[in-house]
Length: 294
Image (cartoon, rainbow, N blue to C red):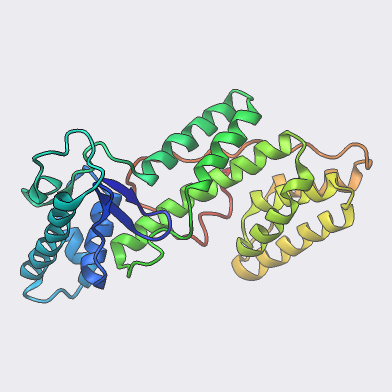
């Protein structure tokens, strides 16, 4: 089974899509897909579908959605044109498994864009630790290329999928932060300017992205704009959060003020991303991105 959730949902068995069009069965498949090869409790599925007010028939209705998914999987198994190794003889119940307390979607050795993202990002982080900025930029760039939009972009999301989307977005942002860091250390300050212009507008309170923007501007001979970027961040932090920029950002501003044009400041120390297991609780997209290096 091949699973893509970093953008539009696409789940394929033997090359045939098994993603339903109806919103709620699609939600069920999305939650099972992001937790592929692990049991998703019935309670989590019910919370995803109906939040805190499930109907009395919730379990029966969920079973109906599971049956609908198995019908799609069974049809894909029957007409798949590119069967993979070991696929012969599998039934829909072998792919979408009922287990005590929940359901499990068995990937069966197929692909998962989330797992591939984690693998490539991990390679990139280790390369950063080793000082291999070329390798870090390459691996992290490949990880980021797996994203085609927001996670679960075409899925109606409840509490569980919303939490998963935030977790995945935080992983994406950590990888992006580190890829830009690697590029700055490779002297690609002009190449990242346009990207950082967009990112600092989108993540208005993200200190590390603003620090990188300031460095890229200054190294490109745009010292005044670099200082303006600091002033804009300070105004935004004060207005939105009642905070001042961190001491690290204040030191960066001072170094830009004092530096000669031929002696731009070094990039900030690489932010260390948090561990990125397959599933962990996550915080909101808006505020955990403020100080990723803390």
